[in-house]
Length: 292
Image (cartoon, rainbow, N blue to C red):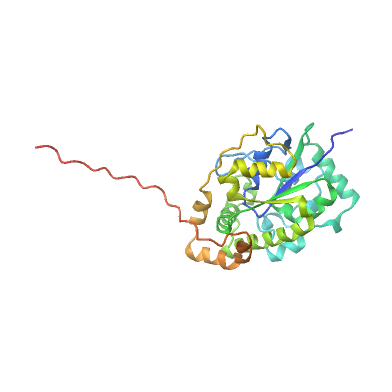
């Protein structure tokens, strides 16, 4: 009989491509936490991340992971689960709780629990399932990551077309309007969820995580009731926002800002546009005239 118990799990979510994976990977380096197995394929930067709960349907042929906790329309909803035509069909809440569903969920997740450690579970679309998870795990804590809308929109379009970690979700054409709507709706859902979870939810800005990792991770660990003493914060790439947003045209950035301005304003992203990233130009050598 499996006697491993899931105590005080941590759920990390937010709009797709907002940095949940790097936060989850960093937390699992802390001695108090553990995560799901690492994915077999690295991301665009050569880094391995933990499986998301969404991936458990493919991991070892499912092994009992509830179908109710996955996307019901396959790859079509990948990274676009918050747009209007999908979110109402995909969301589950405390009203969907059943003892059977809770038992099946815990049975699968117990396999990944390590002795004396808290399980960290990531998956952007868990934003649609957080109310149910809060009911199943009454002692769970939740951390949401918010990131600049233009950078997120570019990542959604690029990774739906080709995701090195999930090649089965490749070849999906996405408009800038769809990507912008995903960001806006996901963050509207986050604010509604904040009213439901109250002090069980902490919202973190991606920009704070990568530019002030020590202070931000100390805040996260304090929220989770763990000590940050002796925990070394990693270094993150700081210019990814500028690079990704810089790949959008001026018209595409205008679409994002027009669609996302309410939530950008709320999360203090109503600021000057980031500089367009350009590769460094090599300095031309100046040759001196030969001496006569």
